[in-house]
Length: 404
Length: 224
Image 1 (tube, chains in turn orange, purple):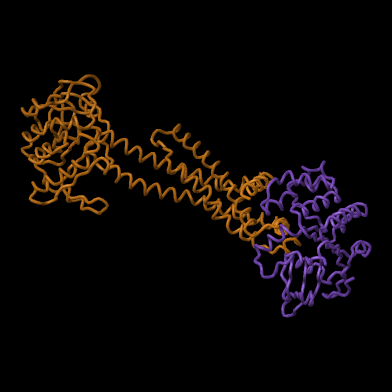
Image 2 (image 1 turned 90 degrees about the vertical axis):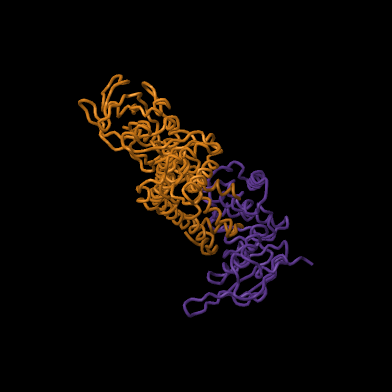
């Protein structure tokens, strides 16, 4: 029965090609726009994931102030005078499975050469930070513990900051001043992702990093804004996170006045925001799907009326209500299925065009999108085919037979 | 003693037109036995078609009982009636009523789909051969003559080996030659034991039958 119904449906669709195609058009447009929107959303999520993972492996960040996941938090609490201390960093380094940890301080002050002034971001850290974060040195070398312990006036900077101060060409060993203190450029690096795993997508190119000890010397302060830590493996991240939490609570007299954010947390949060956006634009795109569905319903209602006599004949020769219902429902489903497949193809073509036209958006076809297309392929047909199919099934055979 | 295949008792059918009740059939009692060839005649409006619809399980009477091959038809659900139509009755209509988009072969196969039977193509081809349409299997109804269309319709009626053939003016749209051929097929079928009920207004055709029931104003006027 099922096979027969599909055969009948295909025969009928083929018999009126133009009409069937126009009916499918709504579904084609609907499905293709949903595919494109979902792929853009998934692509953006993938992009965030790659950026965050690109920072380094198994990193987490401890910041002052309590941020509750999934809750509103008071932004001001993270701006208050930090409760993180240098002893905290030392304590974290001793926790099991912690590979490295480093304090991070943001330093204020002018950066100058003889003829240029720069507004590069100034960060102070321990040498470990340069290893935790995925830095790629393109010139010179990073500072190590010998410079650190000596509170030497050395710095590494990314190529954007370097170009601002020294222009093109090699600059290793060149001099510049921070807060009127002379510094030597130790090396230049390329930053693969963002510094410090900030949630806000600010451009963190244009960064200068100096030893934390040096920053303490020139500013007279030891405020720790962040602590970066690295677990020794992916499996131990949660263990390390818990370890840091209990250690710090103990050290902070029982107060949990800090937050620990892992890379996965960042991906979760950013991904969550992107999910909402994706759902929103997909919902808008699926309006055309509803329009397409109504198109199918409309055509099926016309078909049912046109084929009233056929329905009468079929009932007379033994078709039950269910047989007729199934026949017309399957016909609607075949239309929506073929439409969805064509829409999927069109959506894939759209993705291809997008990747060709721009590098800003990288659409990504996820399994979720494919499942959605399959769902739409059958769902639209069932939802919008049901009413016409019931109308067909409930026709009185005698009246239907008399219909001309 | 021949076996009763159709037994109508006290069958009435009325339609409500606004406030006026139109009685189309009035207390009909008819018993038909297996293997009979019966013609039903009567002027238009005498209730022939309504009676045919009731016998064919397409319609239900307002009152009365109907036993078909021992089954109390009126107590059955619509689904079961469809099943009875599929297996026990073959319909032949005046206007042929083949499905226009389907080939003759596909048309003949259709009742087998609803009866869920197998080897459809083989059996449909055989039966089309018997009515002399082996050269027309893949033709659409509008590509063949009226006589051929009606023979295909008879093939469709026979495909599930029904006990009863209900033919409503089967020769009404045919010339005399094709009409005679169709009637010959009925005659042969009847000789093989199929019960034939033929509705007609043509007394010459009615004479072919062993028994003629004449309806008038919704009542059996004559049953000989």
